[in-house]
Image (spheres, rainbow, N blue to C red):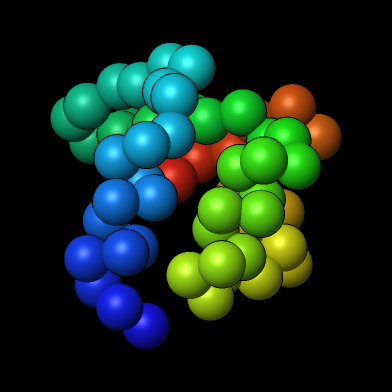
Length: 60
């Protein structure tokens, strides 16, 4: 996996909500465009779906 391509994809995603500290999270929308971008850098849908629901998921 190309690390720069991975970082570019992560930086291009629109954050819906985030929180720092001990309960940190970064929520992004779970839609076809986001899934396509993450799939392109090797992240499969099964992994993404472990960290969210039909509307959003946690990038952290």
